[in-house]
Image 1 (cartoon, rainbow, N blue to C red):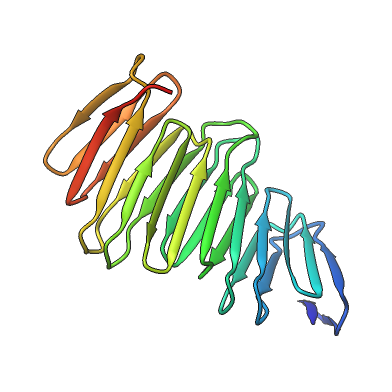
Image 2: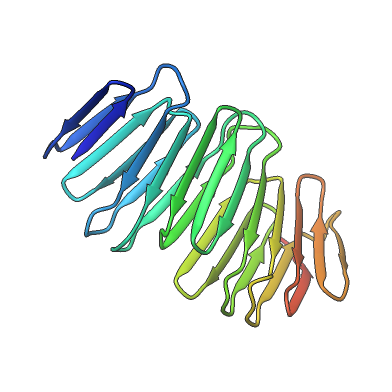
Length: 212
């Protein structure tokens, strides 16, 4: 089913294969909930969708969208705007926000985020209570552990923090040409002309300069 409510009204629709909702003014919010099967959520700066077996829901121009996964092998996809956006990825949720939009996906098994539209975009990863691995290249970063996989591509600056516990590992890669690497007791970073990757608090972290 789908429902839209506001001051003085409540509209509901049952058993439709596809629904569309449009927001034209106000601080409107859209909420998506998964099915028993495998579902997909997608969030852009001006729209969001969620679909699975037998259904699809679209929401256009809502200021905030929230998607929740409870069962099945669910995936969430975020896409940036032309402005400066911030991506936050934790084991339990992913969130991408920027000027005029805020998209959230909770409890999805796999989260993917893409920065292709422009702007000075940042991504921030956080670990779980267990053993996790963070891997970063100049254009791609990912963190994975028991029950989660978070991925970001095209973000200019990426930060990863291990604060939850476990034996965590960070691997930072860059091309040898022009890359600068530095590390300390609890951090490592590699930067180049168009990227900056940083990891802090990992029990073991390595920095490599590799061709290609």
